[in-house]
Amino acid sequence: MSFARSTFSRFTYLLMLTMITVNAQEAETYANHDGWWLRNVRAEAFVCAMPYPRVLAFRLRGGHSPLFVTDDFDLIGMRSRIHQPESDTDHSQSPALQPAEATWLGERSIQLLAAPDIDKSGLRLTMEVTLHDTLPLLRLRHGFRNLREEPQLLAAWAILAVPDSGIGILPYNHQSFARRLIHFPGLSIVQPCVDYGKHALTVDYAVPPEQNWFKIGTDSTAGWVAYVKDNLVIRSMVDVPRDATFPESGATVTIFKWRGGNDWQQQPFGEIEHNGPLRTVASGESIVMDQIVELRDDLLPDASGPDGWHKILTATPIAAWAD
Image (cartoon, rainbow, N blue to C red; front, side):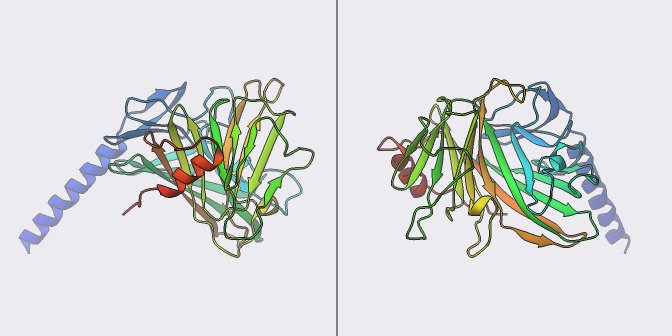
């Protein structure tokens, strides 16, 4: 019995010591934001909780991060957003514009619990970020808890902000006979920055859109959307349930480009985005989207244009994440 108590005490002590070591990781600074690096032998990601929860960098060791980050704007890095189609006012950004508390879940895993957004969206965001033990893979979980007494119709929304260079790649839905494009009111789908292929389209972020902004989506069931710059590919993936209803007229993936140059945001930038399925969420319950983001510097298409990129990205799926 004394041996059991002794063994338990040693185990408890070691466990507590491990937790203290993990939680005592010192904050560092990236792009004028304080936060923490998650690192393995091949990649590293920078996460911040203040002034709001974001992944501000994801890069191969010794390389550069392809994410758009500035210190005077909040639509940066990897972030969460929410669709509330029954709301009279757009509060989709508000849950992710709250300060967060960080809790370490492991050596390369952190949870960011945002302050409750009671007055606007009636939601509370939890973002969990985990770097794979060895691979350049990042897993994000975007969770929104309904704080209101009544149910809410919600869809999670995951966004990666990218700079005004490089290209975004958007696959079509090959499970249906027709290729469906979702474009947005007042915007033409004929743009100098868009190249349409048979299997995918690309958006050149270096070419300004005809108007201040441009956005296009598809109802692809492939689950991925990608961004390429200087042979570095960042590819994001979520599960797309069949026979579900999606916001933004059925778009599962979208690409956004901002021209820049006015009071909203002077600096041009772009986004690649995932929409989750719409679901009615009861009071106290949550809606969750799981996302995997991969970095690759070894993918060279054998043909230029959208279909060349679609071919190689389809032929090289994201590595499986074994827990």
